[in-house]
Length: 288
Image (cartoon, rainbow, N blue to C red):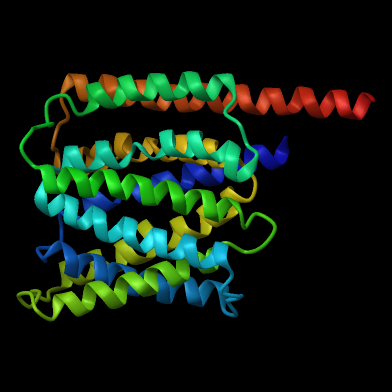
């Protein structure tokens, strides 16, 4: 049970770090591809400093998790450029559905009733959260967002398959790949305007939003199921506007607030039920 609680708390910390992205990105007036490349470069260097001696065995699981993560970030950048941010986030967070469908086959982890219930509530909450921002007519961007959700699901599943090892190396490789690809593309884009605010925000993105998140996520994914991890990750978009509101006063709509409350409540209730279930199972096994 303690293992589950630690994993859940680490995944919540991961989502908290991820949710700071919107705030930091608003401080950087660069092309999204350049932001992604610079962020991943800083993140890769931070993860390398934390790990010090990475265990790069280049196993199938390590490579697929890394490549899927790199594709997720690049596709999401493309989606944000070619559709609305709301569409991109909503469609990317189809990931828990794909994880739920595949985790039984790939990991032997079947969804629990409370997790299925949480997913239904989350879908309702996401619909409310983005009701005022969704739009039609951005097919290329929407397709990229859907694909980023699929690659994110693959990343989570193959990170979980490394639960007996050290999954953080997949994140190191993924950010390295993203940095190389995105910064190469940036050579053909307008040069970024360098100032103290932009540079500080890039370091904030690389170290806090991505670097610390990588450490927490690697800790969480070996302790809780892929399904639980993907469900908790959904509190990220619900928290994103909170930081923006606190920092610059950009107020979310009433429906967005209601949707965010439903998302967070669904994740919390699901997590409590899962921990209670694990405690009962452990108690029965100890008594036997």
